[in-house]
Image (cartoon, rainbow, N blue to C red; front, side, top):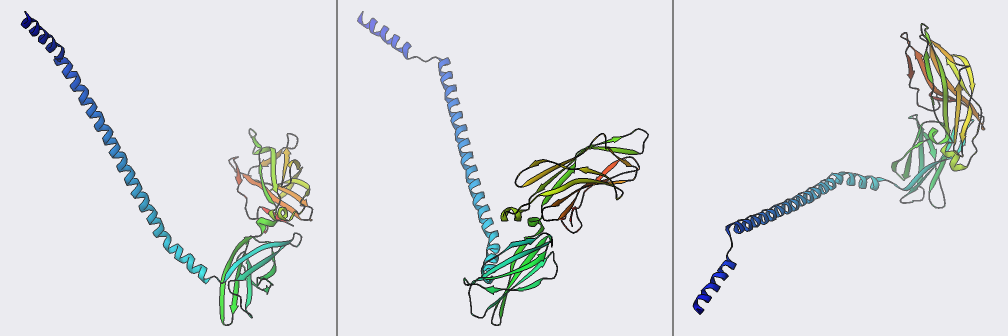
Length: 324
């Protein structure tokens, strides 16, 4: 009896420990999935680390290449600095004669090594013209200075000569814009419309001529006054003035004046086939200078097509802005 119960208990224990084939396959598939996912993650981690290594090496190589490329520039800059006889140099506009259209430029140069009896001369040229020689005087701080008056021009270029006994060193001081600093900046456009009339060989213009004027940088720095009067827009057809339109100020602050001249229904402008039209803004400033600024120029073709021309962009001397 006891032997039978013992055998029955052993059979029950076997049944508890028994794993079915279905459970075995499920466990096997789960194990494969875990191994596969772990392999994928490991592969991605290896690829990421490899990419980071490649990028690191590439950046190091690029940096090394840039340093190698900069070696000639560094050597050239070092040689230029070694040959430069000056410790410091500068030039600035110290005075402007608006009526005479001239600017006074002060040039300064301090030699690296001062020597009794040394001489310093400046050479100043405007817009590529022949350079004028300007002797310099030494100050108590051993800085040599000189001033020269030049006409309004686009760019002034200065060089300096340092003479010690029989040795002379020439150094370029750079380029300075003159007109861009001392003259007001004009910007304008015609913002109107053109009407083509049926069976007519002309068009009519209406709309607004807008002009912005900015105070010169030099006047702002020196706190100089700048104002305009007698502002107007003159309309020319084939070189002949046909209309004058008052220009009204629509916005004004410490640095900018904005003007508007309107071509209305009552004073429309007609342009015939083959004719040229030109809009000129004119005004006079508080220094007595008279400005004429070309806002737009265009013409009407034989096919009744209006073509606007791009105005010249230079300042004084016969460009988009002329000064009298």
